[in-house]
Image 1: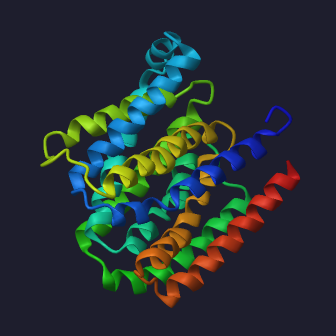
Image 2: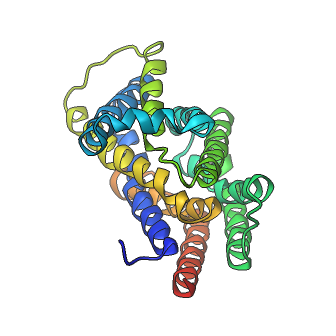
Amino acid sequence: MRNFTDQQKGSLMAFVAVMFITPDSLFIRLSSVDTWGLVFYRGIIPFFTVFLGMLLIYKLSFFKILFTSGYHGLIYIGTFSITNITFVVSIQNTNVANTLVMIATAPMLSAILGAIFLKEPPDRKTLLSIIITFFAIIYIFFDSLKLGNFYGDILGFITAVGLAVGAVTIRSAKTKNLVPAAVVGKLFVASFALFFIESFALVDKDLFIVPLMCILCVAIPFVLVTIAPRFIPAAEVNLFFLLETIIGPIWVWLIIKEQPSIETLQGGMVIIITIAVHSFLKIRNS
């Protein structure tokens, strides 16, 4: 990684993070745990996993890093906590494709916020990619909305807003390490879920599915996604999340036969090709 440019580091981290995230919707569907039980475990397991890892790496400096993150850390704790809750509740209350389509608006929102607050207007390649993928999302949206639930769809959009604000916050604090703030955010998520959870029991397949989901699809990606915007603009990081818009529903389709529409597949191919070309050109130029 030392020989990589910032563009290559950020793009690789964002890509690997999203690849780990893509089966997340499937695991949520396969689990029989209630919504708030999922929210709790998706908070507490990643919290202990990453917290212990950070203590091994940084020891007591972990707390110094946390407290020196200042208002950036507080903003990130808030947005990170909200998006972790709204994502799960959205998935449980609407079609998987709907939630992921809503989240796919995050790059556009990041570009707008980045231009306003960071004075980082997207370059022509990124702007063109956002426009193309936005129209692909609109194409998918009109079909998938018929199958969804308004409550779940709204929470999906709130998740997108949170992702955009979080990425722009990290980008504005490039010299600060906000991973400890994200760890605290996970603890907040678990604590909030305690007010609503009905049962802590994990039985049968959930004993395997829930811990695997929490480590593979939550703990590893959230570290990478928290670091990536330090190297590339927030809008570019969130562009990679569009891959989940198509790959997530395909996982669900392959395993539990919740079939995505032809519009989702067609729009998804446009998204994948656009991101692939955009990433290739940006990395080549770097």
